[in-house]
Image (cartoon, rainbow, N blue to C red; front, side, top):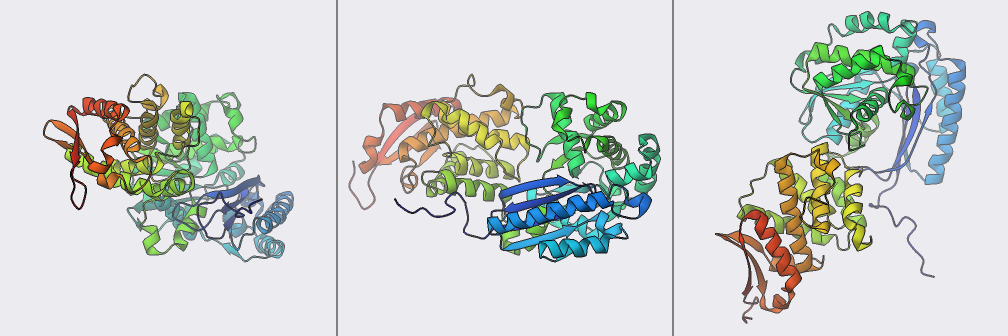
Amino acid sequence: MVEQPQYLGRAGNGSPIAIIDIGSNSIRLVVYEELSRSPAQLFNEKVLCGLGRSVVSTGRLPEDAVERALKALARFRILCDAIKVERVHVLATAAARDAANGPDFIAEAERILGYKIELLSGRREAQLSAYGILSGFHHADGVVGDLGGGSLELIDVIGNTVAQGITTKLGGLALQDVTGGSLKRAVRVIRDALADAAPLDALRGRNFYAVGGTWRALAALHMAQKAYPLHVMHGYSIPARDAVEFTKLVERADTDMLESIESVSEARRPLLGYGALLLDEIIRRGRPEAVVMSAQGVREGLLYELLNEEERRTDPLLAGAGELNRLMSRSPGHATDLIAWTARLSASLHLDETEDERRQREAVCLLSDLAWRTHPDYRGEQSLSLIAHAGLTGVDHPGRAFIALSVFFRHEGLSLDGASSRMRELVSPRMLNRARILGGMLRVAYLVSAAMPGVLPRTPLVGSGARLALSLPGDLEPVANERLVNRLRQLARIVGRDPAVVTVPNPGGGAA
């Protein structure tokens, strides 16, 4: 038997890195494959402990919550050892920071874990949340709101610039505690606390990036209410007006009666009303254009902070797509040829691209061969599902749908009849047309190259006048069979050109 590498299914050669996040409501262990621009999760486990449940009223962490938390941390230590994690970062937030018995809890937690715990200040927590948004969004522009059990942090981000953040005692558990469970009393507490929240003064017309489990739970319910076609939380965007209408529904309703409430843990359901009140007031104060959900926050922000400057500047979408290409494609180098080949063809056809459209086209090239091991009859369907639900960041939902549809057309042909009607709901007519054109390009490219590198640079396809011309050197002339010509004809039809196959001299002389 041939001995296989121990971790053949992993993209990188680095060592796993773990973050243990001791929050006011939950404690979570996330182990990442390695420190990278697009970190993939090897393991993720959360335990709802409620450390911040009564800190406001009693000044102390509840004893039962401490016991649950320490048991969870003992388990996490064993799991980190089993996964052979070499670097473990442990963070603690508002509950441990504010409670009188917080230092004793931290000391015992450090003894159990064997690692030093970083007790985050409110401003430090806001900074890491902002870094999490920079890590997960391309050219972020707005205000980040990280809602935990004990606090709400607000901080402005634009491009790669992070302002100084603020922290408030408006976490869900803290609000529940200070108001005695009364949503009516919480309205005044929230309004008073946010009256002078400086980050909200600059929010008008920009995005509000919502970080935290309570807001993700609200978004999951909103998706269910809308029968939204893509169940991916990161990048889910709700127009501000729609968000206000939904928060009012949550505030009025018995949350247990809401559709798909079973997707929200029972421990988190009582906090949904407070999250809705907070979001409602933030929108009222700040007037954002949209509320954008982020699956990335403090933990991913810490990883981003650990990267060097060059790594931070790497495009997160292309980094993630590149890792999938290396893991799953027949020949990863072929994607590099595809990127250059489709760029030249797009320019010759005067298909002007925005920056985001260029990024998305390159991601399509990187992801276009992921399903090659699948049965041919299901490659389109499998590609669509895999890409639509992949752990990609740096792309919004319309962009994600565009990438998935482009690869679907590459496998299934250019007819709209077979394309997912639900996925098509997410893209504009321009995006759908571009997806068909790009899919058509790939259908020609793969027949010419057999998914191997080195062929496409010798076989350019360009628009020239009224023609769409594929140039083949003499030694590759037999490649132009009926199947290839038919695919070229299909592509030519949708770009309004006449197809042509042109034989050119081989390099170094010798015509066909």
